[in-house]
Image (cartoon, rainbow, N blue to C red; front, side):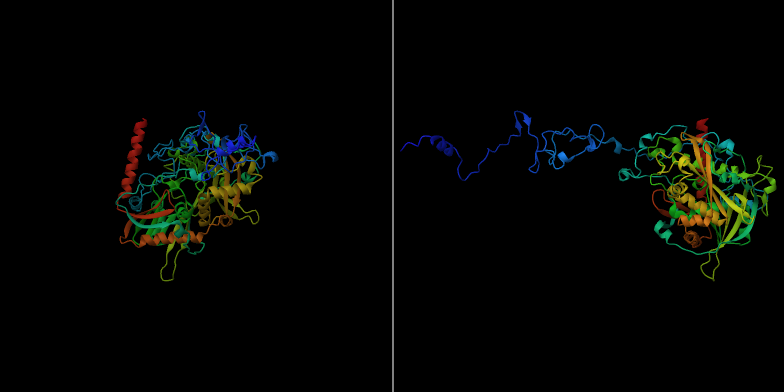
Length: 591
């Protein structure tokens, strides 16, 4: 064999060292993932080597250590971080997010308020539905328990103490953000459903909203009480730092249920109508598709007549706050630690404000006093040591007939709060008075409300629009009550806390008046739909086999559904006795 040419021996050795033609070429295949004990960083074939190291890549939420947004300028616009296409094995394990943890409690909050039994609107112990109503017809004057005394029962603060806001961390939070991650809100029913109650009908809100019944404007049957003149100085713009304080004025006011009203009992004996109700109960039924909070109505059938009643200390007697807000106030069982901003405490505060605001904005001048045809049917000077409040009770009748063959009439007791002179012709105008309250525009449950002190004068329309959204049911009920009473003007007061941390001191920031029908058009409120709901529920009760039956219409606490139950005789009386026993035990425990 000839010797290779000098210089080619090294090339021959290199060729001989190459693998066989059938095998692949390249580095040897290995399963090692470390180099001298150090693991290789993961990589992707699509990665670009733009930077050797990027110390801001793993910062929280894509933000750098300074809290600002990570900026990619033109020098790094098209460059990617090496290893971004694969999961990093160096990333620390993600800890459990404690913010998603919530405690679910099925224990009903039965904390006693500081008002006592007679603080909210009630009709007294001896008048519970049919038995009390029948006893009242035999003669003798009934004693009606009136609403809470402004200065004595409401003035000492509210349930829950005087704690400060606990939700200060949510000041900059955008409402609606991560709402999908919130636990389902579970409210308690307004009444305990018993096993022996018979379910008659279950109606969802979609069916209710399709009901329609056109009726007339009604006619006056009789009127009682008297009215003081409205103080027009409250309509003037409020000077900054010179707002008027809301004062507690002790006046006798009443909210007697339907079957305990002596006037309605007389009208029922004269067969003036088939259906009887009060404006407070009727407005709740007519605005049912807007309601969110639980409530119930007791319906009594006596022969061919139907009476819509309420229970003692019922939810209908309290004025709700931000019921329709997307992020409504939370209860204690739902994690709220701010006692004065919980739903029940806010409702008691709003009820206290409305009770005293209506008494404050009238001028108690006997020369301008307007007397109705009859005296107040509930006030007895020998039993009361305070004068009656400015209130007129108008009993009005509406025709709910659907055909000429059968005539169905409804009698409702409506209320008027004051009277004022028309600026053009000098005639008396009937006025209803209500108050919206601002508690804390930055707390949880405020529903994105504006600061009234700075925005009410300059952006009144925005403030009212926000209230229409957050308190749609409450404003709709007030509007329906004004239309039922055929009031000329509906006055809405704007009352705010002096300090967001204290819920028993308030100032009046302004009063705005509307014509009830114009306000109803702004809210897209259709009374024909409400009349259809009333007639439908009454027909369901009249179709029952028993001529003397009792029903309970219950709003489901967590669904948009109304349920009508037929209850056995005495079932509701047992409910009241159990409630009385619980209250007495609570009072003994406190002592």
